[in-house]
Length: 336
Image (cartoon, rainbow, N blue to C red; front, side):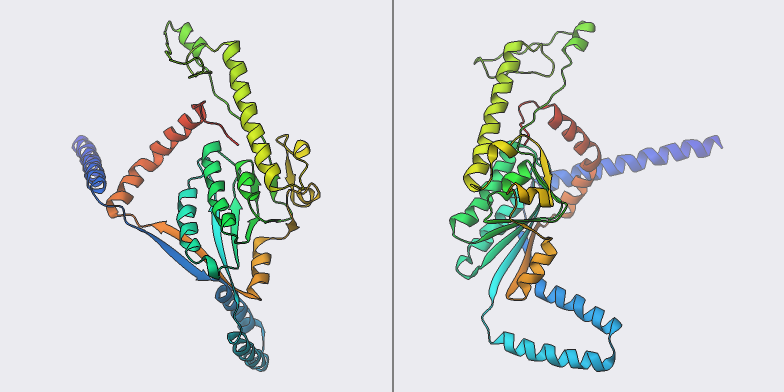
């Protein structure tokens, strides 16, 4: 039995060593490879809805009814083929703290703007509870590119577009929200722990040296002063003013002083304070658009090599946990 235990331990160590070596080799190899271009996938939503309708009809209708509807559908298709339909393009934005998908959205918008003369409308489905100010400012600026080209922009919110998510939404010509979607949270937050007393208790010194009075205000490990706290709050207030001005300039119908208190509104209540223009789910809106337009859903993805996927898998567990912890401790990051 002792031999089996020792053999099992040896086997486990060997397997672990092989995996570690494979990951290291994979990371080194992937670092030397060229980044593969992103592929943009296009789905014709008209076809998707038509296919769903067809499956349901085949399940519940008689052969006679199916034949009748098929004949009518053929006639409608022939009639529609003679018409020049509008073209509507749909993008999805699912935001995290860093608005990481803004890079992907940037490429999708760049591709779309090459077709600007043939675009009737761009619809962006935004789902985000907000995050870092500079990251969501960048995401909003990507939507501004659409407006600058004079292309109608609609933002649909099915669940939440709060704080940085709402910063993106206000760029649109029209905001459509589901009945219980969460909107607003026009405010700014920044928080950090301070371990200075813990360090002092354990006789550990921590020094911060800066050139410039306000190069660093509050710190995680150093001793914070009232003057530093005051400056920190001033900076926070300045960002809030920028946020309020951004909303006010793009939605003149909103009483910014009333809604910019960090509170959130749900669907119908958001409509009452003019945070949105219409109550409707994105599916409902897009199905309506499919009646008069060709509606296309765009999505892009970067192709990853085997080595890149191997490296990502190795980092996924511990790496993301450490990154998330440091993000919340990094006081220089402002959150909207």
